Length: 244
Image 1 (cartoon, rainbow, N blue to C red):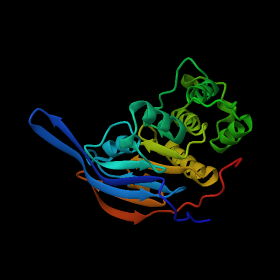
Image 2 (tube, one colour):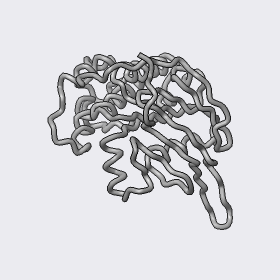
Image 3 (cartoon, helix red, strand yellow):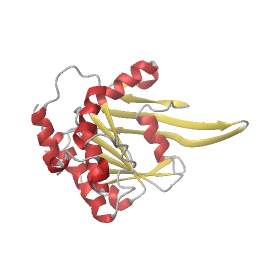
Image 4 (spheres, rainbow, N blue to C red):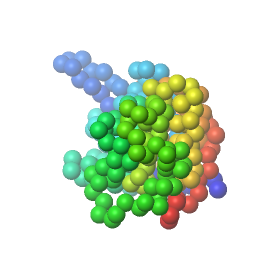
C-alpha cells in the first residue's frame, strides 16, 4: 500500500549549521526545511561539500543546530538534555555508516546481539525476528563468522541487521555503499529497499551517487547547504511491520 500522509516522523524546520573558526564562519547547512512521513524511503543526494553529511548528523541528533529545529516523532531535539537525546536515539533511531564498524573479535551474531544489549531494552531478543531479519538480508549462514571472514557486502548487511535488530522507527544511512564495489552496492541497496518495504521502518539515506538515490521514494538534491531540487524516485511500498 502507498505511504499514508500523517504527522511527519522527521521534521526539519529552517535548519542551519554554521561552523566557526575564530572570526571565520562557514555555513554548512542553510535554512533547510522538509518533512518525512512514517514508512517513507527518502534519499538526500549531493556532491562532496554540499552539506548532506552535516544534515545527517543534525537529523540524528549527533550535533546541535545553530538555528532551526529537528523534531523526531513529535519530540524536538532542542528540548532534550544530552542524556535524553541519547535515549531517544537508542530507542527510535538506528544508524548505518559507510564504515561497517563491526567488532572484529565477535562473530556476526555477536555483533548483532551486543547492539541489542546496549540499546537498553529489557525484553529478550526476539529470535524469530532475528531469523526473519537474517533471511531478509541473506546472512543466516554467515552469522557464526567473524568480520574478517566476511566480504565487504556481507559485513555491511550485518551492520544493517545490527541497526534493525532493535526495530527502530527510523533508519539513517550515511553513504552505506561507499566502501563497496558495484555488485555489493546493488545488493546492499536492494536490502535497504526490502527492509523498508517489509519491516515498515522509515529510511533516510545520504549518498553522493544519484543511481543509489534512485531506489528511494523521494530524492532531495543538496548543493551549497541548501535543498535545490526534490524529485520522486521508485516510491517503494510499505506493509505492516513484521511481528506487529
